[in-house]
Image 1 (cartoon, rainbow, N blue to C red):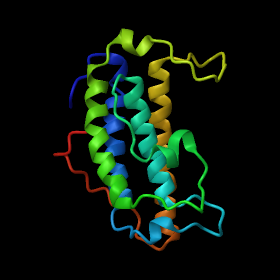
Image 2: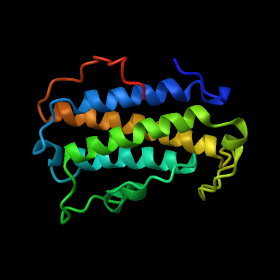
Image 3: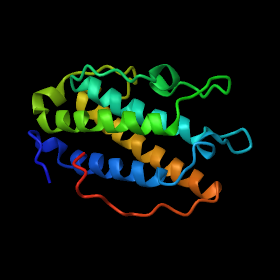
Length: 174
């Protein structure tokens, strides 16, 4: 395993890499058509979930100093609500974006120092037990990624796909 500059990220690094793997495995075999299906008009579709996952990756990158902009941010920025009147990007376009941003964010995570992680990052939460720092924002993004992979996994089953297979690709280094 790669060793981060900051020991504070020793739990984040395997989580990030695990989420990268889970993201690809949970999407394996999902058709473009099914990726746009909603359940009883009440759920987000998989495309929206994938876009929100990517919005988290780009947000982490931004807070860590990357200047990469998510080309589809107008659809997904900060959990923007699903709009059925929009023509969303394809699942393949979003996967391509995932492969673009993920290695860059991963490298930034490895390079982040304790001082970088301790910097204030105002989120407007104003919760006493939650210091608004870069480290805690990264943790929130990791938590959101976990949630979204679970949501996509549930959608897989609802749409009659097999459960996710855990065929990890150890050659993928992000």
